[in-house]
Length: 90
Image (tube, rainbow, N blue to C red; front, side):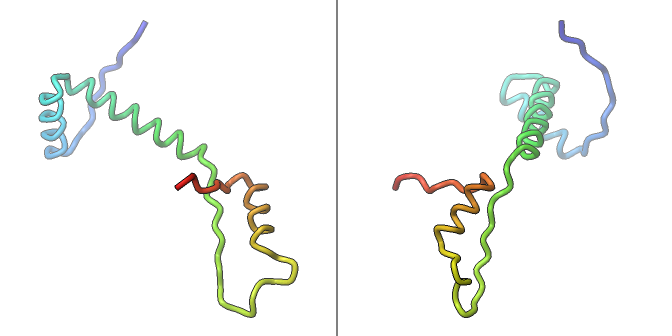
């Protein structure tokens, strides 16, 4: 069983006009449109919080690589941290 709660929310007039027009174009109620928008927003926050941060490699000018450090060893470090993804086929 689905339950509903009535509540009052203040929304900018211009944004509310956009919601009305979009709901009308899609042939749905403002309520269903707003509920869908909130569900999508919450889902995007949830997935962003569980996403693995990207591995960042900073390259600076200098006398070259540190002895013993190779591009392959950098990739090993990235793989160990679970953030490296190989480029797909071209």
